[in-house]
Length: 329
Image 1 (tube, rainbow, N blue to C red):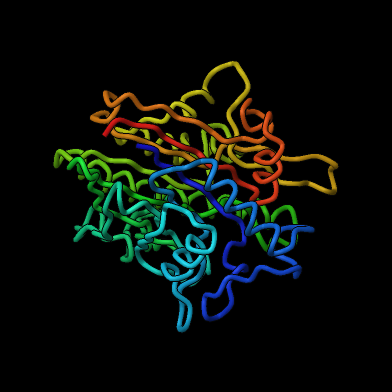
Image 2 (cartoon, helix red, strand yellow):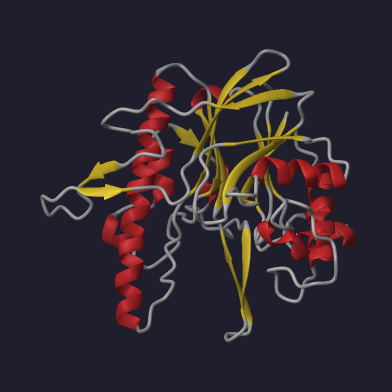
């Protein structure tokens, strides 16, 4: 079985208020890319990846009129994708939903959120924690509540799949360097609280004997920014310590080139910033199932680089690249 996680930038812009796909020459949210070009590029990437299930990070919006599941199934039908069914968890207010697009002939998936408790409440609830050791309890919410799915393969294997998009640490809206530092530290503090919340839920699932796969955009990684030393560890390390494994996260500790799943233009600097943000983590019980990870990076993966069509599609579709896990379930 192949699972994938893919953050698709500005996917919501490709649909109108009735979730009809817009395939024309108007501009998408991607710089200098039309809606038609982006839609076709996304379809080419998903077809090439050929996953049995894809976690779509920044999926189309759900709201008064719009429906994420309907939009994704419309997209799959328009491009004849075998991942024709979709499921989502809790909707949010950011126009960036979490949803799973999957092949119904291979697996079934249903939203099955935890009932929660005081140590790890349900993901649409409130997490109580003292973030700055001032004896005052902070109340933390997810802006994008993780999606918790019960997945069963046609062969009968059962997996707990958690999709996540943790808060960005970027200091959006800062008017000065001091304000940027303050916002960055506050954002990192909140992100670490979200990771602790998520880690507690993962531990509870593992303790209950469940096989767990956590996937998505964690907006973090060991050594990724200058404020990490203030808190001792990254949110990725917190999740790994909960009993999960991802070889790309481990590779950042080595001396070789760090893996990358995202590429952001820095026009003022005349360069691109690359970062490892997207992960597929598995519990120890799944490490015996012959897992194989791959980052579909257009400039680093040999097969992606060798195919002009796939290479250009990856660069056109999003500023993130898919990560896949092949695993024997």
